[in-house]
Length: 202
Image 1: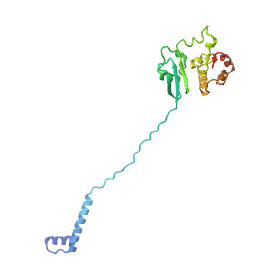
Image 2 (image 1 turned 120 degrees about the horizontal axis):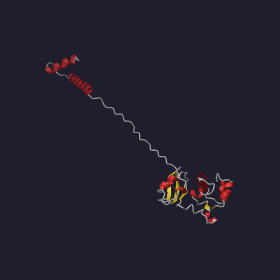
Image 3 (image 1 turned 30 degrees about the vertical axis):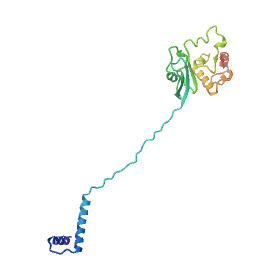
Image 4 (image 1 turned 90 degrees about the horizontal axis):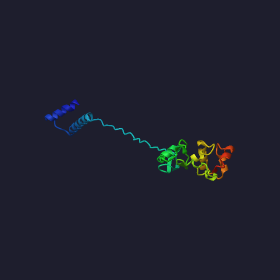
C-alpha cells in the first residue's frame, strides 16, 4: 500500500512515466476506497415486518320464535312473533296493552306461551254473563276448542296450570275430537271429568 502511494505521488509530481499496469492499479485502488467509504456511511436497510391481519368472524345465533294470536280487549289485536319461552304478559305488551274495557283477571299474565296459541282478553262483565242465573245450560257451555285461558279457568276444579295444559294439548293434537279427550290431559281424572263434561262442548 505504501509503495502504491509512493508511486502515485511520483506520478502526480511527474517524476515517473505512467504505464498501463500502473494506471489500472491506481484506478482499482480508487474504486476500492470509494466502495469502502460508501459501505461504511450507507444507512442500514429498514426491515418491515408485516403481520397478517386477523378479522373477527361474526357468528349470529338465531333464537327460536313462536307465533301468538292476541285478540279481544287489546289496543292492537293481531299475530305477534315472540321468543320461545315468552309469557302471556309479553304478548299483551306486544299488542299495545289492554284497553280500558278489559277484564284484567280474565287471563293469567304469568303463564308461558305455546306456538300457535290464541289469547283472548275478555271485556269487563263478559265472563260473569256466561254463568249468570236464567241462562240455559247450552249457552253456559264452554268450547274446548275455542275457549280462552280465562274461560277454561272458569270451569270448576280447573286452575291456571290445568287450563294451560288443556290449551297445550289442544294445540299439539289439532283440537279435541270428543269430550273424553279431556282424560288425556295431565291432571284431569274421572272425578274432575264428571264434574265438567256437561259444562263444555267441542
